[in-house]
Image (cartoon, rainbow, N blue to C red):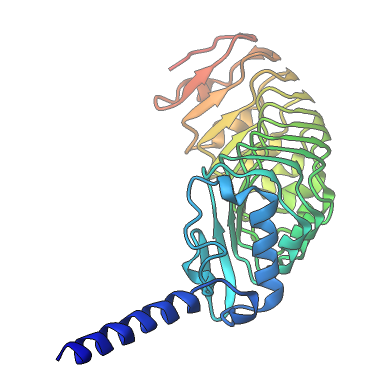
Length: 308
């Protein structure tokens, strides 16, 4: 009896050792995703100091990357990388461009530095990218327009500089764009007015300049625009009247001048209008001042104004 019990114990011990050994991470044993994607994940881990992440469950321990914290695998490919607020530091490596089936990248609220790698523009299936609240610097990749399926791009609260790439006009599916709180400069590309799917756009707290285009009327689905705290100048374009879905418009702390076009009164859904910190003059259109559900903020030279 004792020998039988001992034999069972030995077998169980051997099975346990074998099971543990089989779980030791080995690149060669990973068959769930292509090696190129695996190499990209490993490089991202090392480049962003993965051993110091708040959560790094199963990274470089399990041979099934789908079990790694923040990694979503579908049909044999990495489709989502979600590592927000996870104490990532260092840089995003160019190897991220090898995650060619990636649809969503969330690394906001970390301490990442350096450039946003140009190779990110190779991710043609990308739908959403959010790298807000880091310390990325340099220019926004000039070929960002290659991400033609992109629906949301949030690069806010970083140190990006230079101009907004003209290629942004290729992002025909884009619904949300936030580039606020960076160091961007130059004029707003005329091509941005071709993004008819836009629902919101925030470019506040940069050093953008120039006049707004009359083609803004093409943004017929936009609901929220924030261009505050820049160096925009010129008159408010009458084309704004074409944005029938607009609910919030913030043009504060720029260098706009002239009168407020009467056409803005045609924006029936407008509930918030901030014109403060500019050089507007003349009278507020009567129809605008009569809107009972409209909040108007100002400290310009306008007369006959009513703040609701």
